[in-house]
Structure formats: C-alpha cells, structure tokens
Amino acid sequence: MSELSLRDKYLALIDEIVQTTLKGKISSQAQVYQMLLKGVTVGTGEVFELVLSENLDATQQRVDAQTDELKKAKATRSLRALKTIQTQWKQVEEQNKATESILSAAREITTAPENERLAIFLSVTDPNRKHPLNQKQLQQLAKSLQKNAETFKLDYLSEFSQGITRGISCWGKLQQHLISWMYEQNRASIGFGGIPGENGPWATWGKQFDGEFSKGFFSTLAKQESPVEFAQNHRSIGLSDLVELTLSLQFLQRGLVNWFDQQAYNVKAGSNLSISTFLTFSIIWSQLGNGFGSDTSYGSAAWQIVLQILRNFSQRPYFPLYGGIFASFSGDYLKDALSYLDEPLQRVEGTQEKARILTILGYSQRALGQYDNSVNFHQEALEIARNAEDKACEIANLNHLSRTYVDQKNYTEAINNSQRALILSRQAGDKISEANALANLGYSEVMQAQESDEEADYEMSINYLKQGLNLSDKLGDLQSKGLCLSSLGIAYIVTQEPDKAIKNLEEGFKTAQTSGDLYLQGLNLSNLAEANYSLANFERAIYTASLGMYILNQIASREWYKPAKLLSILQNQLGEAGFKQSLGKNRPKMISFIGVDGYDYIPELIEEYRRNS
Image 1 (tube, rainbow, N blue to C red):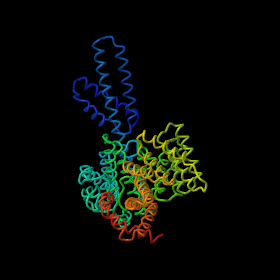
Image 2: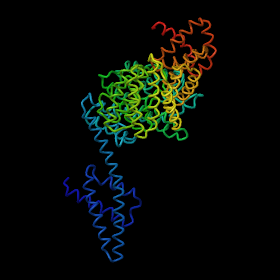
Image 3: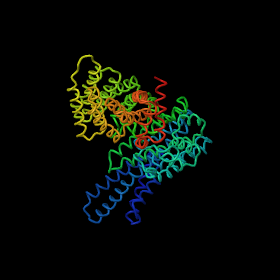
Image 4: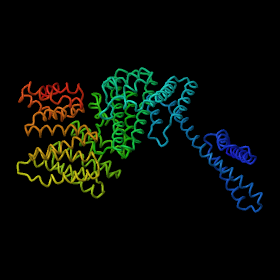
C-alpha cells in the first residue's frame, strides 16, 4: 500500500472517529482504542502519527482563530476528540510494538539454525530485556509458534509452543504454594533446606508438576541429590520438557525475589533471602549445564540462564560485594558448584555487571580454598570496575584481595591493598568499604607480625580493628561487623589473650548467623575451639570445633581441616571414651544446629582427616 493511499485511509479513519464522537455515538475511550487497533496496520504507525499530528495542529489553529462561538465550540469538541485519539493511540502503539516484538521473536526462532534455536528463544524471553515478555505475551508467542509449526510443517516449533504453555500452567499452580513451605514446620531460619525428601520448598513445589521430567528434577533437589547426575541421565529429553522447566524456574525465582523484596518489616532478612534465591537458582542452572555438557545445546542454554540470573542480580542494591553468599544454602548438591559459575562469564565483554559477578566468585573461591583463582577473579574485577567507574566495586575487590593475600601469607600485598582500599573509601565517603578496609589492614598487620621473629607491637593493628568494628556497628552493617569481630578474635588469639578472643569470636559467630554467612560462621567456630583449647576448656573446644568442621566441610571449604586437626588431638588426649562423652554432653545443642545426620557425621569427618593427613 502506497504512502498516499495510507494517508487517505488514516485521514478517513480519524474523520470517522471524530464525526462519530460529535454525534454522541462514542460511549467510552475503549471504543476508540478498538477502532484504532482494527484500523491501523501494524508497522505503519509513523504515517498514522503524521496524519493525526497534522489534524491536531489544524484544528487547534481553527479553535484559536474562530470568533463565532458556535463554530468555536464545535471545533473545540473536534479537538477534544482528536486528543482522545492521541491518548488511545499511545496504548495501541504499545500493543502493536508488543505484537511486532512477538512476531519478530517467532520469526527468529522459526528461521534459526538448529544449534541456535534454544539460545534465541532464551534471548527473546530474557527478563533483562528493556521490555520483557509477560505471561500474556508469552502465550501469544506460543500461539504464533504453533501457527508457524502448522504452516511450515516444523515439529520443533510445536515443542517450543507446548513447553511455553506447560511452563505458564505450572507457574499458575506454583504461585499458590510460593511461600507455603515456610509455615509447614517450626523453622529456626527460613532457607532452601529441609529434611531430605520430606519437606522444604523443593518437595512442596515438586508436587505441583504433572510432567515427569520437571517432577523428577524437583524430587532430586528435595532429596539433596546431584542435579549434575540428573542432567547427565536426561540428556535426551524433549525440547518441550526443557522449556517447561526453564519457564517454571524463572517464574519461581522471580516470584520469590519479589516477595522477599517486599518484606518491609524485616529489610535485612528480606534482602538476605533474595540474595540466597538468586544464588541458589544460578547454582542449580550451572549444575544442570555441567550435567548436560557445555558442548550441547541444552548445556549452553543452562549457562545462558545462569548469566541472565547473575546479570539481574548484579544490578540489585543489595548485591553482596562483601560476602554472605552461602546464606541459606544446604545439601551436598551445592558443593563445588560455585566453581562452575565462571563458565558463562568468558562470553561477556567488560561490563559493570561482570565486575560484580567476578567479585562474588572471587570471594567464593577464597572460601573454597582456591586462592589463586580468587586472586585472578578479583584482579580482573578490579580492572573492569575501574574502567566502568564503579567505585564501590573497585574498593571491594581491593579489600577482598587483601584478605586473600593473607591466606597466601603474602602480607606485604595484603597490607598494600587494604591501605589503598582505606584511602579510596575515605575519599569516596564509602563507610562500609572503610570499615572493611580497617578490618583488613589491622588483620593483615597482626598476621604479618605473628610470622615475624621480632617482638611485635600489636596495639596499632588492634586499634584499626576496633575502629572498623565501631564504624560497622554504627552503620548497622552486619557483614562488616562480623568480619571485624572475627579479625579481632584472631588478633587476640595471636596475642595470647584467649578471654578477649572468645568474647569477640562468640559475638562474631552470632553476627555471622544473622547475616547468613556460613563461611564466617565456620571460621569463628574453628577459632573459638582454638581459644577454648588454650584455656583447657576441652568440652567447649570439642563443641565449637565439631560445629565449625561440619559447616566448613558442607560448603567444601578446605578450612575444615583446621578444627578436624584439633579434634583429632583432643581425641588422642582424652581417649576414645572420654572424647565421646564430652561430645555427647552437647548433643542436643548440636542437633539443633546441624541435625542428627550432621551430628552422626562428625566421627566420620575426623576419621577422614586422619586418613588424609
């Protein structure tokens, strides 16, 4: 259709709506909307807007120039009608854009090479897009794909369509049970754990699925079995099954984050649970990717979803630049999973999002004892953050590097990085980073002095730690406060002041519990055991060492060997019977923390340490 005939068509349409309005035959604005939706062809909006704009200008001029009151009144009514058309056209335009976007997405998927179809589907349904598809639009996409399947005789399009429809249907059921699992038992804390196979979210959600694949996957998570093995055993699943699971998990994750974010009565708890949700779902997808295999379309799709989750997460105000990443994690299926998360990042250019994701990976690698990996992640993040002018991220990575260098016994670099972090944080007015920098500077100096043969003066170093603690306490920043207390506790162990060490480490443990940082909890318990042992409080040493060993082992941190070594020494000193008696005295308290299975696992861990030492 030529531009001239389109102009004539739209002039006639606008005139028809105005005349109908003047005759009193338009009963609502919705009627105008429907006339525009029917009368304007998708993709020709610019021509319609030009014609409408010319009409508005001409009519406005008539109103301004008219002196006859009757004619002026009629022109004014025509102008009001045109303005109604203008308002409703904006809504029609949004609808047309969405329709065009859906048709375009369907075309992309239909014409894509076989090895790119799933990637394109995930791209067009990416929640990070400026205008992500809602449920109604996804349903329209499913219909469009089914229509193309029938037109072009392409069965795989039907699978996409069926998977989308089933995924939306599953979410409808899941939505009703989004948080019901939180109230099914007396929970000491809200998280993604639970008694394997019996309760907790995965078991509750799994009951809502009809499809065997999705039901089996949720059952795997409920039993705390490996998603890697599950994916390895299901590499030949149908496309519709994977699409169903993808949409179900995406809706579930977003639903949980939205709910947690809205818990205004407890902002920190809400944020902690949102953080846990983002990380839990990204780790699950990373394990699926590992199980399917990075050389398969399903494996690549899983890594694409991991990246989408992390990119969304990195833009949140509560993105944890200073740890807390193991909050609410549970089960063997999370062990070593964080090491998989570097895979999708190799495909991303230097962006601010990548710097923040690398920061969290660096912290994770340090917790796992992978110090070289940790340094590499933080150095890359540092460079990207500088280029992106993300000052908070830049300072955070200097702080993390300082901590990791201490673990590598490279105290000179540890002190240099913490000093730079302190200077930059004060220049930027970033108090949280300043508190962390003070903690790291004091900690680095204490550990350097401990290694030196010369008699050291710890007063200045401990003063840095106290400054960091006071600042973090004023800010109400639990993560920084926990780090300062832990560092002070270690400093007092070094200076052979066990009573002061115990006071700070116990408070640090409670703070780490509140912030949800399992790694810091485990370290505090391990150091508490050492302080209690130095006071010959063997029963308390056994209790804290056992808990610390179990927690650190559960998150695959190499640090679990330290409390295991102490427990082995105590076992030799007290004898088998005496050790067992001391351990049993705290059995009820330990079970409240780690469950019966965790308590029963303690002797096995000590034995494993002995075999490997």
